Amino acid sequence: MNMLVSGLVGTGEHKRICVYFSDKDKYAEGSIPDCKITSSKGFSKEELAEIEEYLKDNRDHIIEEAKKVNPMKAFLGKK
Image (cartoon, rainbow, N blue to C red; front, side):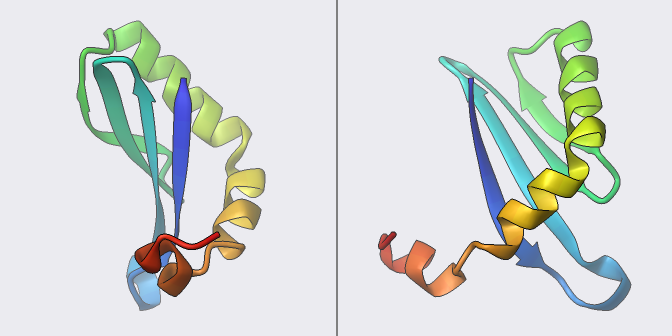
């Protein structure tokens, strides 16, 4: 399974990190800080519950990774 993490998006109380999971033809999108899946296709309810649990258990690490994201470099396709 692959996971992509956005940088911090939004302002004020609406700041969040978007997290995208994909596995072949299945995907799920979630966000932090609420650690909830916001949309998905192909994953079972059990798998989605496991992904939400993963978000909760790894929230601090995901936040640290999101802080490293440079939106301009990501937009331009640079590492």
